[in-house]
Length: 445
Image 1 (cartoon, rainbow, N blue to C red):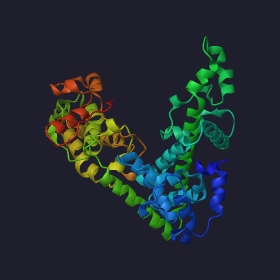
Image 2: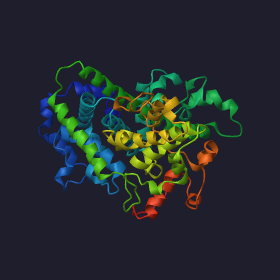
Image 3: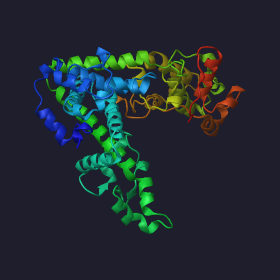
Image 4: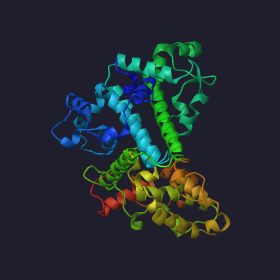
């Protein structure tokens, strides 16, 4: 049976591997055992030396690189990372996991883009590894891991408070009875069989819970524990004088991987219709956005600036492909130093606020805090990476929501009839003007 550490490196088995690991200084040395596992993995591409990790640091970088490229690279080559799905890599993989967490915790902290990439990559790697197993083996692994993660057969929903508050899990994903999370079939039938008429309770259980929800909960719990571990490392590192140079070296490699991904897989429309970030073109703005820029009256100025304009200009400038990609990101994922936010987006938002009658901040200066919150930086007077994630980066309102909440802004032209979101209008206008070179269609909220 495959060790649970292959899926959950934070397990008892995983921690035992770490206790047995050698001195950190040896981790940059060539490791023949790692190389041997890699080159003997079925379907692994060994024609390119760059695809083969030669030591623990290489393996750690490859672990994160797999996630970044799989998510962004349309030409992603699975065979360059086949070794990550070979359970014989477990011992080395567990150590590389801990090295990554420690490097990120020491250098960047829990609220960084590096921390988010590490946590998300662990979630995706677990998901992908489990998909390689047979149904029976997958069920057995998930059950074993869940039993170790949950303290009792009946778990109150408050047990998942951290996961719910970080939006890794939603309450609507869970089936509850009197505040208890229902996971087992026996508990489900005991709680709900009397309420299910003319339908097979077993089928209803499999549809509402089954293996899918169990795997989701297991995945999100381990992601949260990964984030918690990075936080503990960060707190401990603040009391230490000098971090280990190996961890700082790995942290630099991690930062380079993420920076290269932004350069290589940014956001402009290419041959696949992907839209990359670029300076804003006010000529392509929809009529509703132009009306905000001209100045809002007191009746609708707050919602127009905070709920409508701020999300629109921030996504149009930084992540216009949000609806087509349907991948949640944070501002720092696409603007790592927040330079675009500080030098382009906020000045534009503040300028629109100044055009209001009366100027928005003249009598309501506290609304600057709400603007920061809509960018994902919580209720603070400044945008700061340490606060990112305390709130959600709001996506642009759909046209239907604009009509409902801000009807004075809806003055449609002929292009409006073909789209459902002001951001889609902006992209279409760029395409029509020749500033992009691909058709762009996507889901619009």
